[in-house]
Figure 1: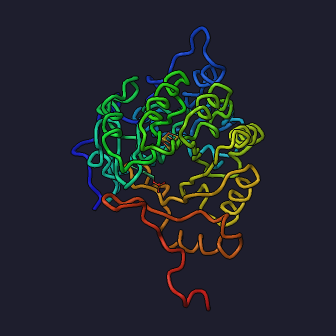
Figure 2: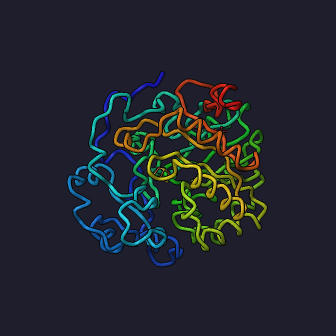
Figure 3: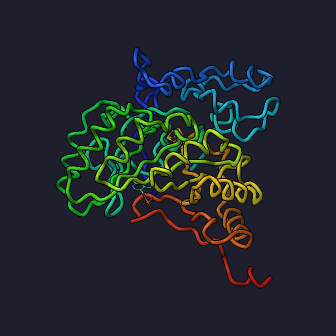
Length: 362
Ligand SMILES: *Cc1c(COP(=O)(O)O)cnc(C)c1O
Ligand code: SF4
């Protein structure tokens, strides 16, 4: 079922790219300056954390393929001196990424096939996903779009005319998801223009934003963002991406509170990652911490099989057991839905947490 792209795109055309990021100029927002100052050197990152540069052995090709990028505020949430820190492991290039693994590919979701027009993925009824940019504030090693040929999708430019025409012509669409890359790495001026173009399409009801910026760079949630987001006729929904409770610090809580104060529902998706969050105490604490911050758990994703990320894979039956244990320890509304994305299905595929009734009665 899982289709592949004919060939892996060469680096400059693929993956969330830093070249798309707005360079901070006169009048740049504070978040844009912080973004420009993000750590990009693996040596600098290990130095900041007091870790042995030996950790980088053999990782240079991984860094070349998909370079390190992590804002200082996220680095400050890492534990110094801990090579297994769950926040560090999400962003540090390693030699393990170079291992070839059967069943892994550059385009595990067959997104090249689901592309309605450049930059627009229309896989599910009623909602379509607009790839606003290829850029991200943070580069997650397990990212399923790390090899995505953004350049072929005309993203990063400011014209979305083809996508807007497609959306306007399909009256079954009620929700547009801004995604990427990270849509909030784009300037508010451009986003406001896009939001207003979408609001003028009468059949649309909601504007959803899939973003890791409130976690990676919480200062992104500023007045300018809230202004265009709340001014729209469309009901905004923000879906953040958090994998570990330690990603949520005071600044993140404040950013989420600002969204909530503006009456914007905030949901969270998590990717289940070996060595990072594949245990019950971590997932339980993540749900508790998110809820205290005003966020509802939404999806727990089994990782997409993208080249370079096999060492993060969690076995499906182990994941089922984890979620079943979570269900027995948390109220139902704090348990995210376990799903896997499979090319060609009409929705993300639910994975039942319970494999057989016998296991309950054991
Ligand atoms: C995940 C995804 C959506 C959203 O699915 P929901 O189940 O509504 O969250 C929409 N379009 C694409 C292409 C997606 O990958
Ligand atoms: S923030 Fe999202 S799109 Fe960007 S690198 Fe991380 S997982 Fe990928």
